[in-house]
Each structure stands twice: as C-alpha cells, then as structure tokens.
Image 1 (spheres, one colour):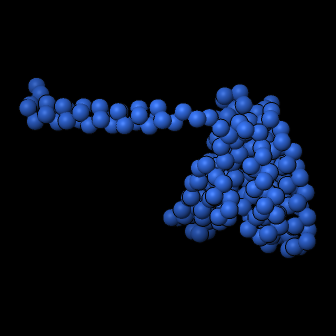
Image 2 (image 1 turned 30 degrees about the vertical axis):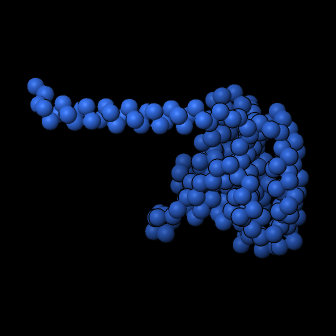
Amino acid sequence: MIECNDTDKALRHRKRMQRKKEIVDAAIARANQTKGLLLVLTGNGKGKSSSAFGMVARALGHGMRVAVAQFIKGRSDTGEEAFFRQQANVVWHVLGEGFTWDTQNLERDIETARRGWAVVQNMLRDPRLNLVVLDELTYPLKYGWLDMETVLEDLKNRPPMQHVIVTGRAAPQALCDLADTITEMHDVRHAYRSGIMAQNGIDL
C-alpha cells in the first residue's frame, strides 16, 4: 500500500526528472557539430594513459584505425601494448628510451624526442588514422626538447576528423588553449608511497 507521502514523493521525483530530461535533450540538440577532437589528460593523478587506452578500445569497437606514440617510456612489456599490438587496426610506436633520470643524457633525450616527433608528424598527416594517442608528450614539451610552435601547428593542420589524445603531467598552457577537452587528474593517494611496487594489470 502506497501512502500519500510516498505518492507525493514519486510525483515530485517524476517532475524533477521531466525537467532534467528537457535540459539534457536541449543540450544534446545544441551539440550538432562534428570534428576531430584534441583531448588533454593531465594532472598528478594516476590514470591518464589508462584513460587514453580506454578510448583506444572504444575506437576499435567502432572499427576505427588507431596509432599510439609513447614518449619517455622505453619499455615494451606493458599489458596495454601486449594487448593492443595484437589488434589489426592499431599502430604502436615506443619512441622514448626511459625516464630522464634513467638516461641521464640531455642531448640524447632531445634527439630521441625529435626523432619521435618526426614519426608523429606522419601520423598527423594520415587521414586513414581516426585516433592518435601521444602518450606523455607533455614532458618533451615542458623540457623544451620539442618546438612548441611546430607541435601546435602540426596538431592544427591534422586531418579534420582525426582525434588526438595527449597525456602527461603539467600540460603547457599553449597546448591546453588549443584543446577541445581537458581532464585534470588529482592525486589523493597512491599505493607506491606505501611501498607497494607496480602491479601487473594495474600499473603495467
């Protein structure tokens, strides 16, 4: 048996949801443009690359062609690479040689970054690629290893419907100004600081 208070509550809920639906439907109707998006995933929190690779999976589900370029990271034994390299519509490039505290060679780091960007330029000119992931690109930009204006121009001049995702901490303001979507991930707690090593399936 439904009491009056329960009936009133149900009616109020229905009216709120009707108003909300009108607002949502109007917003969806206004969003009538299509274009290739530039997304920036930045911040100190964990999950920037993981989020990008989630979108890679989504794109593949739609039959799209994807290219991934990893700056800084030099290892080729991560779970995401092992999985996505098996997919027919994925091109994967590991362009880095490891973190700067590992390489300890500034000239070599700069040269590696610039060779890597030459590979990316070909990706950004290829209209067959629907999604390009530039993993940890923010670091060679932040350190000045790549010319910012060149990178921005290459991003601007890519095929109109090509989506690009850039990941990494401290995304430069000039890059953010160009972006369509920016997500900043905050670090609240990380297992590493409790002495827990990187875990397969979570970190690797």
